[in-house]
Structure formats: structure tokens, C-alpha cells
Amino acid sequence: MKDEPHPGPGSPLPAPLTLRLYAADEVIFSSDGHWLHPLFELEAFFAQSGQDPAQTRLVDRITGRAAAFLVARLRIPELHALLLSRRAIPVLERHGIRYRCDELVDQISCATEALLADTQDPEAAWALLQERRQRLRPVI
Image 1 (tube, rainbow, N blue to C red):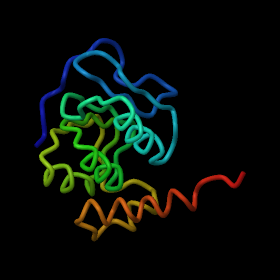
Image 2: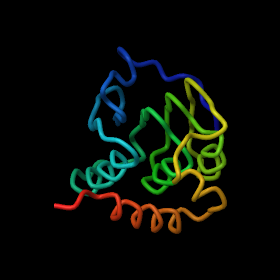
Image 3: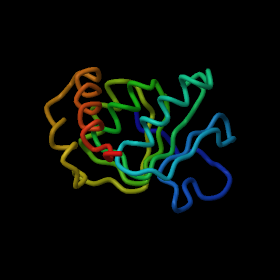
Image 4: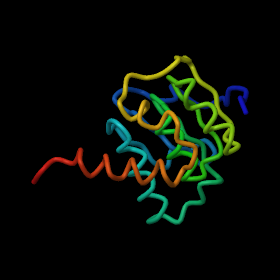
């Protein structure tokens, strides 16, 4: 469901931030991480804070299909993507997520976007993303 712009104070996502979560007009979480790490961090935030995702809205710098699956899994009802992949739209619409974007592209240059091209199930997508996340973690 494409939605009208939600007015808010200042820039929705000043550099170097890549993700920001709002409850009403208050920023309650932000990240400057890359790839899908901010969304995994957000999952931990919800688990620790007790914040109801249904009462939030998300601003994300780049939202591809993988990010859309994670947003759906987190049950965030509203998304503002600065850059949105057309491949993400069916996932957002299937899960009733209101969305808007500043720029729409056919796809983003990310291997994960291609890997999930035919995936419909958010849990299957999450399992694949968890596996990739483990492989991408730096060795300590």
C-alpha cells in the first residue's frame, strides 16, 4: 500500500545513518551499519526493549527484497525507503506494509536480492539471511 509522505522534523536519515526507527515523531533506534545488519540489530532492539513494532515506522536508506522480508518479519507497519527496489514491493504489499520511497529502481546491486528473487515465504528468507549473516561475520 503506497502511502502519502509522513511529515517529520528535519532530514529523515542524515548521513552516516542507514536506518532509523520512530515511535510517533521520536527516534527510538538508529544505526549506521551496512548490508542487513541494522535490521538484525533492530530485531534485537525489539526483543530487549519491549517496544511494540506495530507502533513504529522505519526509515531505511536502501530497501531491497531481503530488507522487505525482514521488515515484514519484524511486523513494522510503515516504511520510508530513500531507495526502494521494485523487487521489494510485492513483499511489502503482501504483508500490508505502507511504504513510500524517494527513488524507485528495478533492483539493487546485491547478491541477496537475486538469491531471494523467487522466495515467497518470510521464514525461508529469514533462514537464508541468517545463514549469509553467519558467513559474513568477521572472524575474531
